Length: 297
Image (cartoon, rainbow, N blue to C red; front, side, top):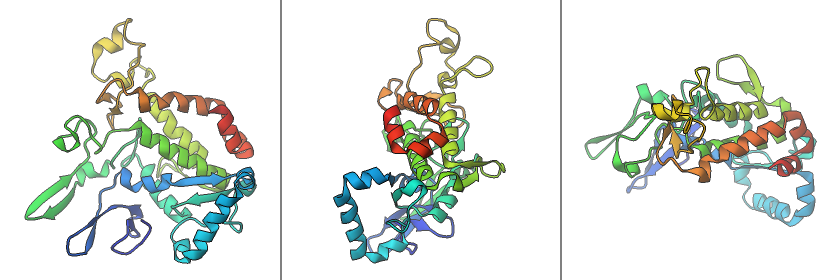
């Protein structure tokens, strides 16, 4: 995953992870689509509190022994171990190093790419103007930005991972940002949105993404909830307007609900995000650590 050569997912020039297609002749080729594929490595992040090391020392010992057996891996992921502790002596296990995290987040928080008014899109809006084209067998295969329903039966005909906002992946990325915040604290700040000149720590970035997700369900200045899209009855009928539907996924630009309308299994996670950021502030989290999250979860 972290190799920089032709066999690896990491593209040093673009500062992003891509799918790699392995061909029958043994060669490989990166499929340069800026999608959630490139963001998922960030999710493989866990902070280890001092009390966790004391309660499970064998796990830490096992991990460190594996690193000694494969020292070549040390250069490819985040520095870890007793010599690389963060805020309040927290350790970290993470696939993505700090410099790569910054480069990835520059795209994630770009409103012309992943960051939409209502959360993170499944694919960069860059591909609306610049679709990715892959040629094989004399045919062109195209991937573009589709913020609503898919134009292909590839996803079963009623789903789409090429543009819309999906709650579970947004929640995974928010979790990862909070993990990195526990490690770096206020020392890691980044433009949010990209190019705005507004610097935020990673707790503030996570909260900003959560707030955009909340907007899907909240009434806007005109009294309409974006989740209802063009369904006028749900906007105006007093018997329906406050019975919010938990759709499967949401339009990447206007937040309208799409797919199954009863997907409370994962879209219901919005309630936990509202609760989490309503009960925890950044400084308290930094001071109390994971114990504070667990108490409020």
